[in-house]
Image (cartoon, rainbow, N blue to C red; front, side, top):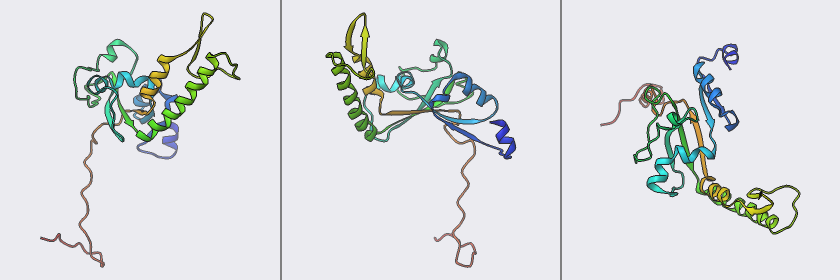
Amino acid sequence: MTAFQERHSLADMVIVAGAGMLSAGNLRELDETNLRFIVGSRATKAPNDLASHFRWHGDAFTDGQVIDTITPRVATDRARGSQNARKRAELVWDPAAHERSWRAVWAYSAKCAARDHKTLTLQENKAKVVVAGERAARTPRFFKHTNGTKALDGAALTRARRLGALKGYVTNLPATPSCPRPKSSPPTTRRGRSRPPSG
């Protein structure tokens, strides 16, 4: 990344990547080389990242809702300790105050929820068919075979329905810009001269 940045004389660059790049080592290396990043998160991280929301609001989300919070950099109890579900307000990521965390942004979409509900129902039905004794070309999702017993993985299905419509991202971009937005220029006349504001 740094070689690409030097080759093209880029003073600043933001790396945008999918969840496949979401590892503690990858994010640490990007941050240590002063590269900013936005990386897709995984639904399995939502219960911890959104612990405060689930405690105070349950599974209730509104369409288009965005929750800005923090996520631990590494999967340790000490890092997870930065989250305090007993507080209703979400923590605003501060790199100085939350040195064991990254900023996490989660969004909910009602359209995605409806699509995911339909998809999960189809997958549930396929699993039930295999549980009933029919053979399948490949093992369907939500089917489990334990000690010779075929069963529907209800816990995994419930978790998927709960988290499927949530899309998360991990970033080291600050929650508030460090530089103020430039002031808008005064309106101009057709000849290009500045026109004083009315009143």
